[in-house]
Image (cartoon, rainbow, N blue to C red; front, top):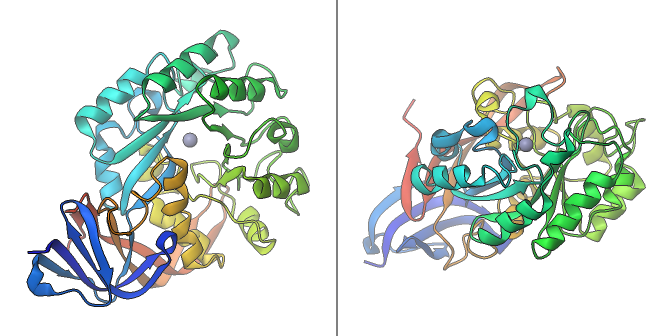
Length: 383
Ligand SMILES: [Zn+2]
């Protein structure tokens, strides 16, 4: 038998590998073995027809939270991921030098989803922040500990996280950004991810201290000092130039960071997010308005972003940033056999942003089958 599992007749869409069309996907030994118009079913231990479905690489969520407040999705991470086609996720700085070991322990013992993480510049990470931001008290900034944690966990830690916003940092200037950037250099030149929602400082003054490969997250928030400044009409030229220079703009929906008017205007002006992510936490997964990554993708589809561009930014693009180029977020032979199968349903779907606006989407992505490392990890129950 050549294949352990054969997915037949689906519409394959893998922008990272340049694949699009009706094809079979053959899996062997936990890896993608072949993708072609027709593969022999008599060479497969198990065949699953996915005719009429969209077949993509397993989704990669660039910004979510496994251990914010010390637990959050925690041991339930797999449950949310597998039911939404997500096989890889990046924890966006839930923990810092003082509690990263707890994140590591949860991941090593309880989570199968493939995970990498940013380490918070604050030693305490995002813990108990309803009582004050993790860096509003300067002594919590731990550049040495953060850099050391990254260096000591090369299989897991990929960069430095900074949340810049009101009551989140010790001073409203570029100093916190400069310190985060210096920390990323101390850790060997890793990326820095900066949260920007409702910034008290204009965005151009902050991104001036970032480098290509660094990530601006929550790029479509509708609060103060976003990508369109205070006028909220046109994407600032400094922002367009930063994206051109290689600074990554990640959308990270969350409960406060996804405004339909901003998205509509930005897309009209040709400003697309480089990565599409959820900022998922237990609350936003169970009470909305995020729910899951396919729902965030559905919202962007509603505003006219081409499906291929959406899938690219939820597979190959974040996989590259997370250090998984060629092995995750792609269906290239040899890659880990992480595959997502979706239905693209027609109907009327009312969806909300984070500022009270609603849309009625006419199409919706719904996960049907998730394969992780060659094994079927989720199948949507028959309706
Ligand atoms: Zn977040």
